[in-house]
Length: 84
Image 1 (cartoon, helix red, strand yellow):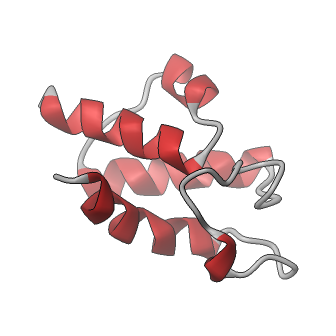
Image 2: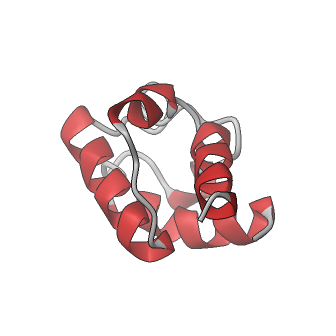
């Protein structure tokens, strides 16, 4: 699965948890999930759970710690999919 395909599937998941002051148009590869998109830690966990379901993968705790930007998330998802 390409980065673009993952981004296409990931964006709607992230959009569900954006606060009202952030729009889906602000989701870019280098967007910091907490600092720029204002996603709180509880919603970050929800995003991880939704991603696990959507891509049929499992995140370890250290994966979550590495997931700072949208690009980080895509890279982690790609690695998980390749190792399936």
